[in-house]
Amino acid sequence: MMGSPAPFPWRSYLWALTAIALVALLPVLSVALSGGVAALAGCRLDEGNVHPCVILGIDWGGLLYGMGVMGWFMLVTVPLGGAAGLGWAVALLGHLAWHRWRR
Image (cartoon, rainbow, N blue to C red; front, side):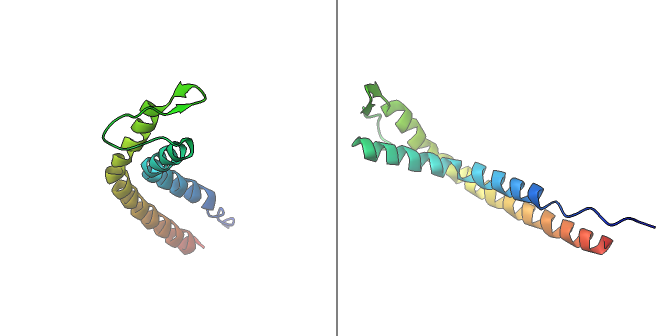
């Protein structure tokens, strides 16, 4: 006689989806954060040059520029995240079907 099957691992799938979304959207978050900090500090931020942005006596212009330019990585991370999300959905549906079949 077989025992009852193990419960479905929903948490594992949710953690995986969260990791996929975070990695895919990290460049977008970087741009949003750098733009928000620059706007609050009244600093100029663009992709052309590093502009000084002094906050609390420290020039953050180079860091904000780097964070803003990292937005270009979204041209790679968003499509790869979409592909990984599609793979995640296929794995989830396959696991659900297998789990249901075992019952």
